[in-house]
Length: 234
Image (cartoon, rainbow, N blue to C red; front, side):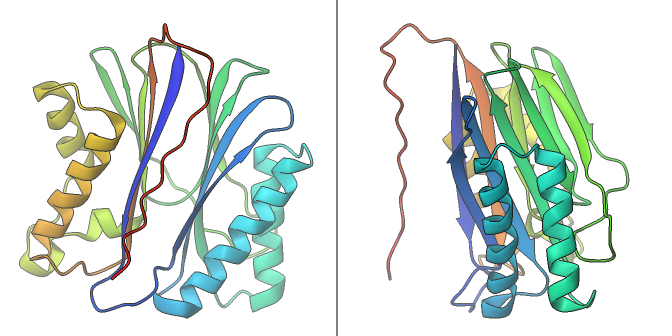
C-alpha cells in the first residue's frame, strides 16, 4: 500500500496572500503529518496567524508530542498572543506508521469527508476553532490504513462557495458524486473540487480555499518516497 497526498489551493479574489497555511512534516516514529490552518479574515494578517499556528504544531509533532496535545498547545499560544480576539481553524492528518492508522485532528467546523469502498461519511459535529479560550480541545478520529480509503479535508472557503449567488456548495454531496462517477486520483479530486467552487463564485473566489486529499492505494513499485509541488508565479 501507499498513501497519496494532494493539495489544491487558491487565494481569495484580489488578495495577494492566502490566510490558509499548509505544511507536511515527517513524524519521528514513522509516517507523515499534514497540518492545515485557516487564520481569521484574509490577507497578510490571517497568513501571520495561520503560519504561527502551523509552525507551533509542526515543532511539537517533531518532538514526538501527540497530535491532540499539539493542537491544544497551539490554541493556548494563539489565545495568549491575541488575547482571545483572533481565531484559527486547524486540521492535522497524520499517517502514523507506528499504529498503522491515519489520525485526524479537527478544530474546524467544516466536516471531514471519508470514503471506504462504497461507504461515504462526513464527520461533522461541533468543533471549536483555536484561540477562543484556554483548553480548547480538538475532535480526534483514528482510522485504520486500508486500500481504497479516501479522506478529504478543506477550509471554509469551499463551503461558502456560491453563497453570493444563492447556490451554496454541498461539499460532501459533490465529493460523493465525483467518486461515484469515476476513480479520480487525489490530485484530480482536489483540482475538481476547487474548480467547481471557483466556478460557483464566478471565477472570483469569495474566500481563500484549500483542499487536501489523502488516498490509500495499492502499491507494487519501489520504496522511494516522492513529493511534487507546483507554485504558479504571476
